[in-house]
Image 1 (cartoon, rainbow, N blue to C red):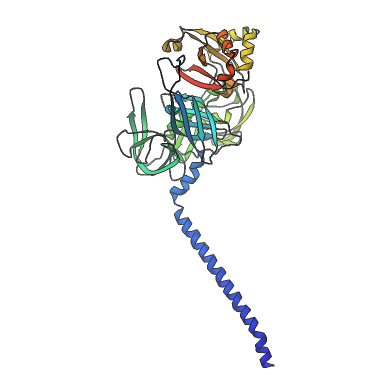
Image 2 (cartoon, rainbow, N blue to C red):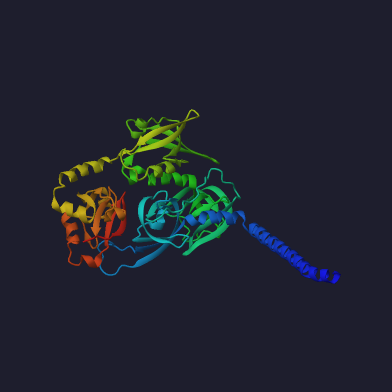
Length: 466
């Protein structure tokens, strides 16, 4: 019996030892895994986390433009093409991207590549040459990641910053440095100077222009704009608070949708305090009708939190005239909800031309241009100031743009002066129809167009369904 008992206990002891070894091995694996995770966490520095947060919203821009000649519009022969590069920051999930104006100035085409590899064609929406900022837009099937925006009100000398951009065409290049100086005034050339720039020693190279300067929270505190020629590690960025005031105008409903609200606000930014305070309300405007008063703080528009005027404008962008929008404000420390409905806005010179255009809408030639291109336009003579500056013999002032038309999809706006289609000038409707009826029109479709906008020449292409 004793022998038999020992014989039976042998496998049990072996099983117990195996179970013990299994527990020990599992504990070893768990400890190893925890060690690996701890090591990985140690590698996840503040800079790494900041880059991971910011980089999905960086837009890498490639452009193509025609080299200037004595007569770009009507030159014969093969024009020379120049490739360019730059960077942008997604400021709205609908595809609005801010970059430097000098990145997109005079370009024929723009292509944007995001961090996930998606590539889009982009078009210029608006720009401010003086402050060297522009808004371009891509049409994506899904909402794009918006860049986390910080404030430049509390930047510290020596603070660690990160520059992200399309340096020399190397997409999503990341460089690290510090804030070297604040409030720098920089003159680049005879026509371009900057005020109140951030100086940094984070490497900024050609192609970084328009990209973000990011703090260790992954928030944009500046827009990279310039380098000091011949120097090492001296770069400059526009403070984001300054840039946001310009962006608010560039994406305003008045500029892009020709609607208006009549509210003038002031951005109040002091570190973590970021709010839009109503400065004045235009008499008889939608804002006055809604009940806004000076001193109100705008907190939300249609559920979207508002930090500044740029947020306010983009929250109203794309809304129809008369569409009611709920706006939450703070007045005398108490929250209130107001109902705002935008009204139609017209610039007075355009209104005069528009009335003439409406009187002639029965003209079948106008209707054909409206159907094919999507614009109504009226002739302006060479005496027009903008035309005289460039020596054009005349042009067609755009008074209406049909939504989703070839013109609208490619950035033509009310107030533009159309001066050329393909190789021909456009002094009147007959000139436009000559191009649209040309027997070889399919060979030069998409059709290149030339416009003057705010005194500056712009170029683009539109696909026309002949």
